[in-house]
Image (cartoon, rainbow, N blue to C red; front, side, top):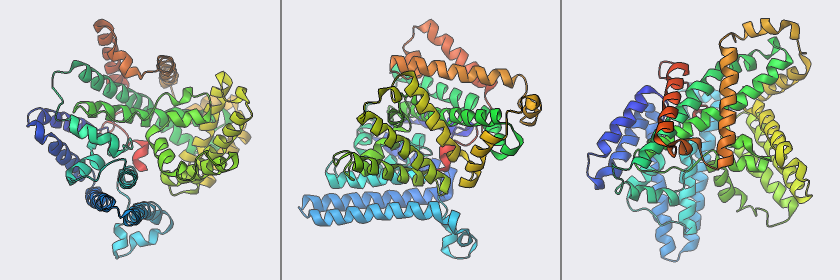
Length: 477
């Protein structure tokens, strides 16, 4: 869901209805609420998600039917055709507007080929479903409502996480057993949503204006501020995406649905391989299960393992965006991961463990984010060149802060907020639990104090636009 006032009110209304209707009707209510949410979000997204759901359901049903009839070759061909169709539709919708914009201005049907919100996420879910049916990991679904709910469940619709049907089907069943009087679940839901709002509205949305000015006007700033810009974006995108994911997990918990965790203190990682086990975890697992392992994984020697890793990150870059800068971002992570593979083989432990490994992994991720943030490959290269050639310009630092419109008290608030998220991540990393879970386990007095502090921070320091917050970054992908 989007982090807007109307969306949060909508979720609370659906939550009230959820506990009023009969238990058998709950999944139908959630499916209808999800479809209505998508319709209200974007009419084209509503059409696409319905069409994708029906095609996904039909493909799964036919594949399952032919597998039961021992006609595995037909089932395999149906699976391949379905995967190619879904993948091709994603490529067309993502790349056509960028490389062939003239079609969008024509009077043909091609002008409607604009990728709606959430498409990248639920198409990957559709692909995983038909592959899992072909593999025998799950049975073909008889009721299409289950697939509609699986693809369009509104807390995760906009920016994931990417859920497997093998995991989600148990959640569909569990909503019938969800009881209102489950205080632990309500506590987790509250603190996940509140902490997510803190990360998104207080930190990420506060940083976005300064990051945008630095990246758009890099020629006007010295090296110190440009380096700071890349570091601020590193924090911004984490708080934006992880904050959204926490809110999605909290809202889903209102209905007794447990979503796949998507982030686990990624910047605490000791190497880039661990980083990708902690960053956008649902996407990483998707690439592992449906691309990396089918390519041979690490079973065919070091060279093939590195090649497979590069292929995975090349596809990852393509998935994130149509620009060449996203391809370079993906290939950079592929290169960093390949170096880490070699370091592990050679037992160069200093490069992938301890504080040295953490700093190296953070710097690698932060450097690659420049290509992710920049509007084009040329802009990213120019920004990096400016980082090293614009000079320190220490004497003009105060004037540059004024140009950046970064004035007091923001110069105090921002460092304190960044320090707070670093400390909280260190605590969560050492405890091996998410902060919302740790808060929910505190004694009542401490828990109420944490609630009050978080709530007041969101209320007072949150950055509010017409719809509460700025669009989540990953809503664009």
